[in-house]
Structure formats: structure tokens, C-alpha cells
Image (cartoon, rainbow, N blue to C red; front, side):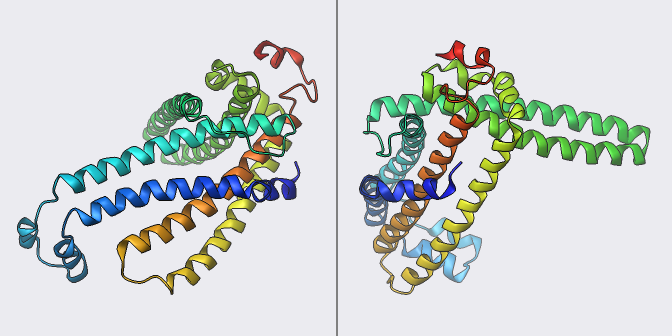
Length: 289
């Protein structure tokens, strides 16, 4: 995996990334402006700022229909934005796996559908993880009743097992996403056992992927803190202006980091053989073509 190439990827496509940032910022700002302009929030701000007694809460003016509409719109944008970004990331991964340096075009309907399937697969992984956690918790309880020492040992083992599983499940999820991106087979998203076997057999690339993703988080996190500190000194009391600047900063750094990460994930897929690059154990990938 080439970390520098992944880091540069969204900057080579900065026009498209910035356009996405601006569209999302406009949508969120519209909802915030609708909420802010549809009700006098001064009493609420006073409650927060001066820590009024709970008795004063009943005296607050209830928000009207405009504020409720803006709030519902804000929630809808948040949900749809998550679905869309997940689905679009599938297209980004596919394009990178096919060695295209330009980010693919946006197809909102198709992106939302793919994002929905990724959401369902995430739930599936979560259900399996929850089941494992419950089983381990029950085992710890049983052994703790037999012996406090034995219970402590089992507890430590359970913690180690959970941490290992979290990493393996994360790698397996990326395997499933890249298999889905490459072949378009939705069943690849839900094949946890199969995806885990692929990830486990390629622990080296999987560990490097995690290390590179952590490095990206640190780099973008430091840069974002610096920029937010500088911008914060120039933002006035206007809530809409503050919201606009906050959204721009948030989405700019998050999306640049996100697409750098997608590039790493696509490289990871190629390195472990998804897409027919290395031809490892062909029976594991040929059936998804």
C-alpha cells in the first residue's frame, strides 16, 4: 500500500471533494437557518448560559412548525448523507481498483441504494459482535462464580478476544465492501465467515491498513484542530455564520480523510488479491465474479 498516493488522492480530485462539501454545507445551513429564524431561542440560550432553575423550563416558548420542520430536515439530511456517502464510496473504491485516478461521477439514486446495503451489512456485523459479547459475558459470569481467580483470567482472555475480534471484523468488513465494489454481489457484504478467513490469511496487509488509517486520523486531526483554532477567532456571534464555517471545516477535513482512507482500502483489496491481481486461492474470489 502506498500511503503517500492515498493521501494525495482527494487533493488530485479537490474540485469534486469541495463541491460535495459545499452542497452538504448548503443543505445543513438551510436547515439550521430555518430552525434559527423560525423561533426566538434567546430564552433557551439564557437557560444554558445562566443555568436557570428547572422551574423556568416550563416557561420557555415551545418551537413552532418552522423549527420542527427544520429539525426534521436536518435529521433527514444527516441520514441520507450517510447512506449516500457510503454508497458513493463503493464507486470510489471500484474506480481506484481499476486504476482510475479520477473520482467517479455521482449517481444519487444508485449511491443511496448501495449505501443502504452497506448499512444493513454493518447491522449484521453488529448483531454478530453483540452475540459474541453476550456469550463471553455469560462465560465470565459462570467462571467467576466458580473462582474469583479463574474469573479474572477468563475476563482478561475475553478482553483480548474481543479486541482481536474487533480488528478482524473490521478487516473482514473492508474485504466485504471491496468484494461488493468489484463484483457488485451484495451477498459478499454479509459473508462474515468468508471475509474473516480472507482477512485472517492476510494479516500483514490488514495490520498495515489499520496503521495507515490511524496515521491519516492523526494527520487530519492535527490539521483540523489548527484550522478550527484560527477560524474560531474570526467567527462572530451570528449562529448561521458559525454553523456555515463549522460545517465547511468539518466536511472538508472529514471528506478528504475519508477518500484518502477509501484509496487505502482499495489498495488493500488489490494487495490481498480481490480483483484478480494476485490470484491467491482463486476459489475464494472467482465465485463472486
